[in-house]
Image 1 (cartoon, rainbow, N blue to C red):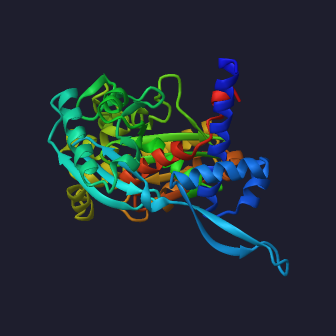
Image 2 (tube, one colour):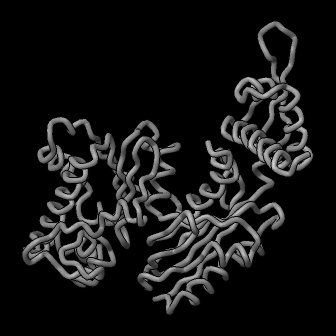
Image 3 (tube, helix red, strand yellow):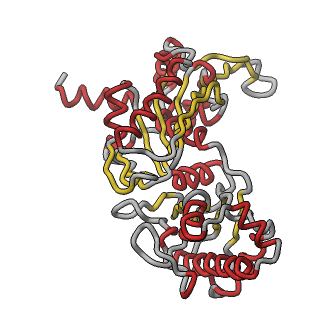
Length: 390
């Protein structure tokens, strides 16, 4: 056979297997007959693929169910062997690296963590990252069945190349995380910004699953943002789309110098790190001062809420989303009714044509290591149609 034709045949065979595997995983359980119907593949092709997956232990057969009432025919349900395969999820934050090894459900089986006051350099960061991964691999029930490493980063990421562009505590420095880790551990590695990862997860099967155009904003140690249009993440030409933390939102005495070199950035007062550097307050001390009636803090907090409302109003007017998801510890640290306050201010500031937007508050942020694990699963079960130029 001609080498090119042989390669194309192998690629098509791989894609067909991924189609079948993805359907089994997303359906939870499915029969061979249903697989053939949904994929358009022949019964024999489906049977061949399923037999390979059974031999490899990737899927297993479950109970027999009637195909149709009164027919007497049976169908065998197929399941992904989720408890026997594993992925590693990593959360890379400003002062810690935390990881979990999970099965395919995904459920956390073991966790590890390394903390630091500051990353000394990229080598120090990679050293701590390696220590976490190695501890997790040591606890893996079967390293040979570990299918990849996902990394959620509180920083700027080139997800296509797997490069960390801006690191908390280090700044702008291109760290080739994927290349280093894949060479060391011989596992596929996937990186994504934490806000982007949250947005992708919520759009797939969370609070944004019924949304098509949406914005996600996370106000925590830093400020992260993500923009989704027609269910696709908008990254921008240099991966900074959604960097709402550096919107110039404050003026006058509240316009403080930001670490980015600008003045009046949202992050200077509405992130935990920025608030500490700019004012010396923690979230707890800010809340205490506010509720004790400290006039300056009450005034400053009012400016913070107004700046956030203005930023949201401008974003809604410009991008016209149907949902805006808000999360992070900063949001409700001072007032628990912040969502109703912001909703009223935003609705009063945006055009009539944009007032169908709904603000959603996620009170409890999901486990970042689980989100990173799901990033690996997304790639494990995705169908690589781009390989055929589709």
